[in-house]
Length: 198
Image 1 (cartoon, rainbow, N blue to C red):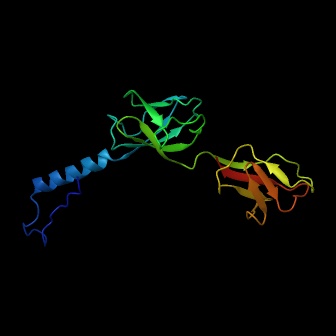
Image 2: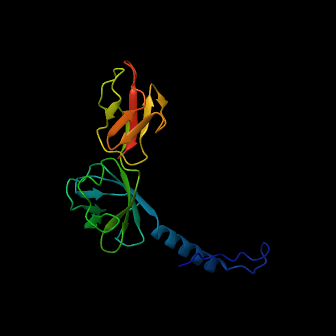
Image 3: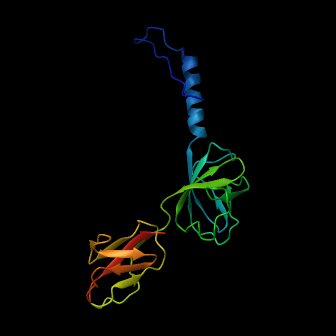
């Protein structure tokens, strides 16, 4: 349905606009369509077989609803389901329609899910999990210039801080996989922290 525009006439009280009943019907139709396409928010509990009771109740699975769900736990299997408001388990797939890999759903991450009539697809995420203030592995000793992160970061997401100042990639450091190579080895007592997304 397209938006229903209320005819308000040309000047106030000229009796050329929509009658009150017609205007109310158009208003109801607009709200019905807007409500049907609302984004539903919730936090999913469980692991692999998730359950969620969103803030705005979902009364049926249909292709007009989108769910913005924060998962409390990562998936540990490739078969993943979600049960919304007790409507029954629905499979969760990646955006291509495949089963997600183990760990694709990150603990604490928020994902946009869309039901396509058969199952939910993950169509967007919050930027995955955010790691902040990680102290990478490696000696800060005036000599060592290589440091290792605990996780593989998403491309372009790494921010390296030396003594509170953010370094510029290529002039302050280089990154390959989980390894950060500093342009100049940090000196003893320096504080090296890294933020990134996974």
